Length: 347
Image (cartoon, rainbow, N blue to C red):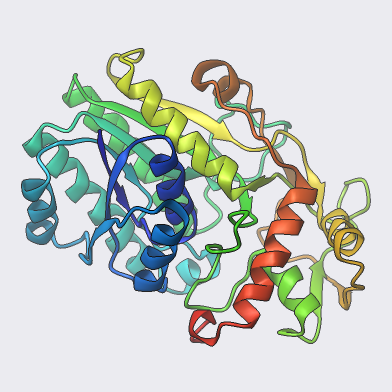
């Protein structure tokens, strides 16, 4: 069965492609390589799986070019839609860029689904749709809060667009996966997180500091109402997130779900503080990190982590890796990046 993965050479997309192939699916991807070393990623996926994946280097905001992909692949049975601009700070500076790209690309995918009779969609959403939560852990039924960034708002709006689409298209099935903080890399160290821009995510920042790419790192806030005063987040291994997408598409293809959009939290189900993450890395590697304690950042919640019971019971998905495996794989991947100039950020 053929699955279309948009953004399939990005960080989570590429790991999901590997997991889909490992589980017997055929995969075709769409990625315009706007934030990834796309050709290299495709070669690396082939090295891991032995399968050469066909990619269409198409901008999904171009409906005519998007339509060509569907016309040439009439046997697509499901879509996993990752493709989006993803950086919170950038979205604050350039909100219309995020609305134009993230929403128009989704609408074009939905229009093609209707035109070519593709019934199954997995949408890459985010825990950012919850805003700042008062009660933890976060449930799927937790009311959505005010979006803290245009990026988060595009995810909220994207979910609403999909819900409206499934109301008007009664045979359409959609799953909205709200995942928390992806981190780590494939255990082979052949693929991992390698954006074209400077990384802002905690785990790669830790690894870059350890290897000397950064002089130091900053811990933003030490007086939150948490165990050690630093922010608490739900770090989930990227291969566990990848497998959640495979389980979700298997669930839809099993005909267990009959129409509509359904939400699942994808997180490890527990929180790790910034200082605990640093300590876990130092323990694994024996490397002492140079970090500084700084003030809070505007918009950062004190703590957020998932209740993942629904994904476990309904999808049969269970995260298999914890913070130690995340740090081990992230560190192994960082050493590959450090030795490979062609995969380093362009800015």
